[in-house]
Amino acid sequence: MRPQEIIAKKRDGGELTDEEIGAFVDGVCDKSWADYQISALVMAMFIRRLSESEGEHLVRSMLYSGEVLDFSDIDKPKADKHSTGGVGDKTSLIIAPVVAACGVAVPMISGRGLGHTGGTLDKLESIPGYNVKLSANEFRNVIDKCGFAMAGQTADIAPADKKLYALRDATATVPYIPLIVASIMSKKLAEGLDALVLDVKTGSGAFMAELSDARELAKAMVKTGERFGVKTQAVISSMDQPLGKYVGNAVEVYECIKILRSEIEPAAMPTWKLSLELSARMLVLTGIEKSLESAKTACTAKLESGEALELFRRNIECQGGDPSVCDDPEKLLDGSIHKFDILAESNGFVSAIDTLAIGNAMCELGGGRTKADDKVDHAVGFTSDVKIGSEIRFGDPVGTVLCRDKVQFDSVENKLRSAYTISRDKPVQVGLILEVIS
Image (cartoon, rainbow, N blue to C red; front, side, top):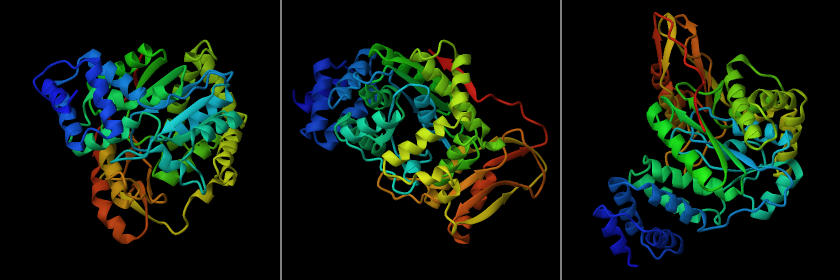
């Protein structure tokens, strides 16, 4: 089949056959389709839309275009968690060791940050020596030794996705749910899972700012997971403010290790609460626990006993990092970093936070990426000292910028101050967990 014929069919509103979608994905992988032809079909999909059948076969073709991991000989249930991304969203680093300590194997294939959202791989690389570039055999060996592994997508897993995502980003076709589902689920289904829990973010710092869009995405991903034989559940969580206390790579790892050490600062409590919720649902879906309440009790016990911390220590060692950060988390923090407070300009209550603005400010400091090949400064960050509903007075700090110099601070000061809306009346509090989609 000639690319032009497939492109023309979708351009004119036709429904592509399984064979035509397969030919497209094959062409992406073997480079027989030019970038402009791939972009043309993706744009046609975006404008003309995909049927449910087309969307399902796109996932299938992308999934089986590469290697599907097989952990069937591991005598444990296999489960993972995926987040659609946010600001200060660091739960993977807590969930993986906690769930592994409860008897579930966690093969966690993660990504890097792009735009205002952080990436698990960038956070992990702030641990000295930590290697996220594992071969399939190395990935398997780490799981055997400590119950979980966290690494990047190899060239053999859903190989069409990397090229398609780059072209979608360049052609403004990212925000279309069937294409998002195909990108996420083709990678997650390649992990050989029994169960998958999805954390779909909504709010000012999420890709899906509207709850209705987040709900539609969550339902589509749950349906896809179930169709492929993976028990799947989605939690829709609020990203109307940064999660936890810290935003930035090294400081987010610092927050996670402090939580694993049961040294949870009040501002970091939402990070543990969301991690606990997602971890517990993984245990229920895999049959390790029968109820959400008993699963939360089990996860809390593994945290308080120190077993989860010890597994994280073992994982760091297995993946080439410095495990002593588990004993002295301050080692993660760069002593040359300067700290500047963002001060409130009025009395009242924090009624809204522009979380996207905070994420963008972190990118401007070098803590994130605007292009996929940008380098990341792991040391810069922001402390989110107040939350929606906090009472504040003129001159009080709403947060602290961690940056290289005063010039950097000056570039983001007004943006960060403007991100906080202070009102006379105390706002109605919105919960962290908004909905669960089963």
